Length: 389
Image (cartoon, rainbow, N blue to C red; front, top):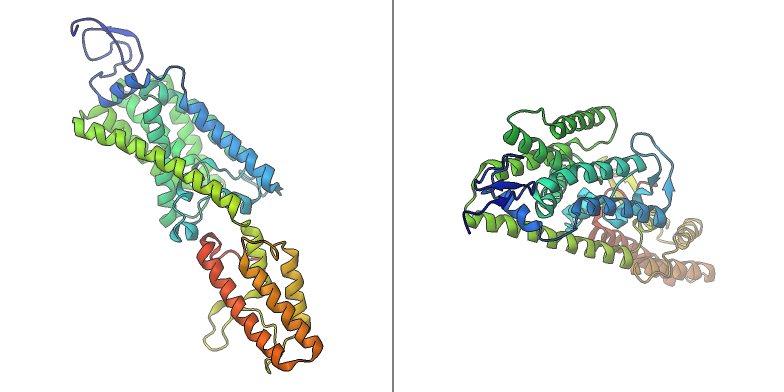
């Protein structure tokens, strides 16, 4: 049985008795080729269109929920509401620091403009199919998601928040280029030449357009190239192969879990822009008169004697009611603030000074509690929710 001709695990052609395919040059002892051969048993399944389609679907979903924002140039033609993108799970540095790890995964499939999602979906579909034909769907997933997640990990420290599949796409480019160079010995393969053109275009756009996450591009490309090298040149022991398979499986589990958390978050939590707007009703940014530092403090709704300022309190109450969160059970601090403001205004109208001053103390306490609640339960809004001031 061992002496019978066999099919190449990479290209599927009859290759004879050896281990190196005479058609595509693949080493059929390499772990990448063996995993791809196993993946062929999953008949008819293609991962690249699924990845690209997920990006397009989520872009349409964000537009349907949050509407369209005015274009601001670059990739922002027909761009979704940025707060809705955040609600769905974009990468936000304070959010990840506050424990929202799932944003590193969901941000890979979210995009900030029509050209953004169109370009990345096209590249994921086209280049992804080439890599999937070469290595199979499992390793395509490892390269794409590994590059995308690590790209946002790098952005966490050296760039900024955002969204997009660019890290995953760059990882596919890196894996393809390294694989073809090691197999062919040159860069003359048609796929290689086309990928080089796409990489150069990506680099040009990164330097010309604003707000392009070049850190994610670079990290993804290096990760993909490293995976391509390992799968092509190294003969991995069985333990290393098992570790690679386990890593891919755990990455898939983490991705599914991240989307589950993001969906639950989007359904059960209030929209971040509504919370932010409610915050601007009662918290403001101002300079400390003692040391000159800037901070975020309760709006002054009372006078020096501790009595309520009817005008300022009424403005704050109307502002809170306009956010539609006054009766939202997901945001209990707003309801308590509305109640405290209402009690204070009633006491002011009735001339009950004792009750009025008690209400002022309650308002002060609720505002501070509201600010702390946002910092705790909405970490992605840290440093952002007061910008309307």
